[in-house]
Amino acid sequence: MTDTQKNRMATRFALACNRAAFTKAAAAFAVTAYVGAVSTQAFAQAPNPPQGIPAPKPAPKSRDGAVDAPRGPAATGAMQTPPTPFIPDPHRNLPLSIFATFDDKQKAQAAKISTYLSSLQTLIGNFVQVGPDGSKTKGQFFIQKPGKVRFEYESPNPIAIVADGSMVAVRDRNLSTQDLYPLSQTPLRYLLSDRIDLMKDTNVVSVTADDLFVSVTIEERQLLTGTSRLMLMVGAKDGQLKQWTVTDPQGYDTTVAVYNLDTSRKIDPGMFKIDMSEKTFPPG
Image (cartoon, rainbow, N blue to C red; front, top):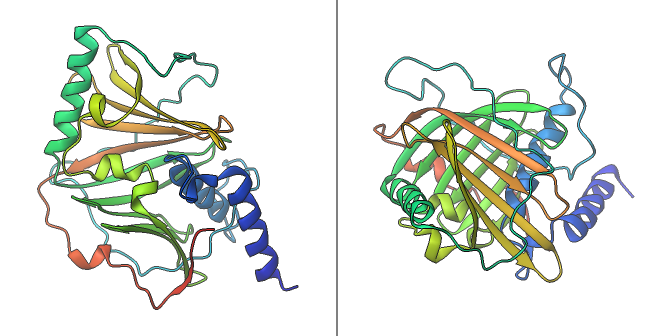
């Protein structure tokens, strides 16, 4: 058996055991957790990874390809420095019941976030991603609603994630291969929906606020795969998207903090094209 076949078999096993959300009965949030694991693994396996970043735990290896997206300042004003992501307490307690109740203030806070997310049509920015082991990667993202997004990780990480409105491709530039997943089965659908009402369209289990953030946690429970959560955080003062954290069924968190946000720049539609000529591995 070749190394490629071994890697593919190992990935299939990991997806079946820990990322079953790629199947029709799967939890909706695992693709983001998988993307975090894939990017972390690729980053750690780079020939000369930056010093000071801990080696991550083994994760499914991606087999995807992509062309480089145009680079440049994401914001029209002064560039911001990368933020320090807020890492949620891994022992944080959330309601055990899926039938959570909220007061009028919490409902109003969730409605405000829903209105903000619905108002976004295009969004460009930078991101810092923190994996479950604390390792960090950075990159740039492009969103065009409805349903289109591109995440580009900085070199030497070869990963790119592209959604074209119906499918999500996880690409590896080094291997010129990609994995495809239905957009409807990923947490990206919440960020990419043309309009969304969090209280009506999702299972909100927590709404909290402090001086820095307003946070909404969405939960999905699956009989076979367990519980997955997505926590969205916006600024308490400016109401802008700050970060999200995905918790997979095993309890591992992947946090993505965003900055240099720009809603005014036009985006080349070609950035969201999925090249079907690449070697493709469908889910399953």
